[in-house]
Image (cartoon, rainbow, N blue to C red; front, side, top):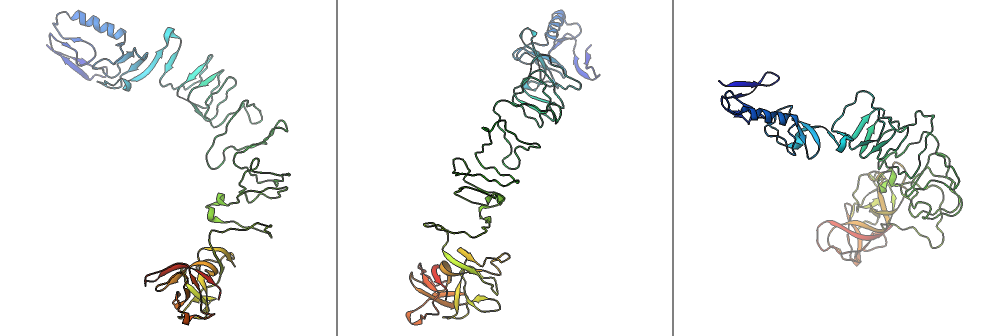
Length: 406
């Protein structure tokens, strides 16, 4: 008569028929009633249980909670569910090194105090509020809120706070240390003073340093070899001596095009000059409407300037520009919509009707446009400028021209 084998929780594991040995339900040989030679199977089972199925690979047909000693890795493992065949999925408990000299723990949760009288080597993370020991040799990471190391060595430390007991208790850092932080924001914040033991020591920076305190007043002559090539803090004042940066920018406030302010009266020395990317000289004038760059304007309208109305107008004044090399009357609050820059000299794009050849003199065509003029049409008052390129079609477009104030 067949009988059932029950688990510890009372559920049925398997049913064994008379005169048979079951080898598929577990890693053991389970004999049924009236099976001849069942003693060998029982003894074999005892041996496997005693040695915890010692082998480099897990035993066949394991059941949940079964132990297996991995002879290759030297670890004791627990099967988390029935029939697990992947050795890497077993839960590792511990292993003993040769001679029983040490123990490796896969996962350890300590709710009380851990006292270490020898060396502690950690390949993973130690997470704790306080860790006090004679020697900590960390091969990976220590992650904690506060760690107090009363003596010994800490290698590869990654923590938020290193303290010697209290804010008033000083400590000593010896050797060479590198402070690595985020690419933006604070890298290291000092709540006290930074003091150097001797006058031969100081602060060295491969980028730049600034402080919002007393004025920086160096004396002597400085070059890029000992002063950064970029002075980017608008609060730096009181310079003495000769400081000659090769570039002044406000890009740290935003984009390089955010601009800045030059105050005071500046003079160019002999053989010095200002250079600009663009070519026209412009001044802001109040317009009676919003005009596109290249629009030909004249004095008049409800405001100061308006788009030229007539063909061959002798009241033309200039051209709306968005590429001024030098912009005058650029007061705070003025915008291109209300006070567009009007090119009164230099190169600028001009809105054109009809065909134009390089060198043609330009006159107004009405409605804010210019056109090429014949010799008979030209006067000293209606000429806007001269074309610097060719436009060989009859559609409306733009062309680069050199203009002059009329």
